[in-house]
View 1 (cartoon, rainbow, N blue to C red):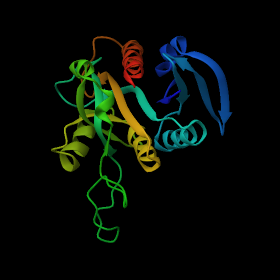
View 2 (tube, rainbow, N blue to C red):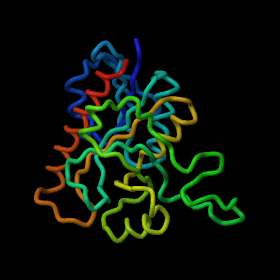
View 3 (tube, rainbow, N blue to C red):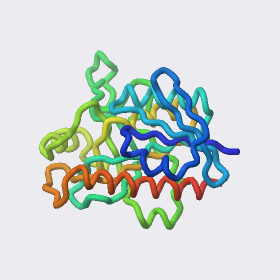
Length: 231
């Protein structure tokens, strides 16, 4: 039986999945809780990493080392950057990278902004898991990750316009690139999915909590669709 791991950052991003996955076992490993169950003849391992790059990387490594998933799906909500986005749009990060890594100094190796020595500048999701029907439901673009909560368009634009002007950045978060990097290093397929809870710098008609719950549920639906599609 194949195993798929799903990592989210916050409890509310896990709520719907836990009601659908038949959780039969729970494991506590170094302050990380892993919920194991089955769905559609597939073993599912769910985990809540907490917010931030280190938390996300640690959860990913523990999941790979202890449960050996063939695919890790990182799902959740994010602030949208692209001006044509609307709340509840689904983004699949076909590329993810770091917004706060700077090794551009000649002393550090003069790497392009966002790139760590020995790593690609961007980590590419395995798009084979997104079929044609799903592609009609989502937008493809770059997601950038940093240990900062980007809450203004000016702050986001300062990063994107200077360092990623031609990279189709659609959203900013605090976990996805770390999960992608660990998966990449371990040779595990990964997908990064974000549902837009709010567009950075734009006033929303509904409050953040309402939108974030709707976004989390929508993200869970796509995760289940992907699991159903995995051969």
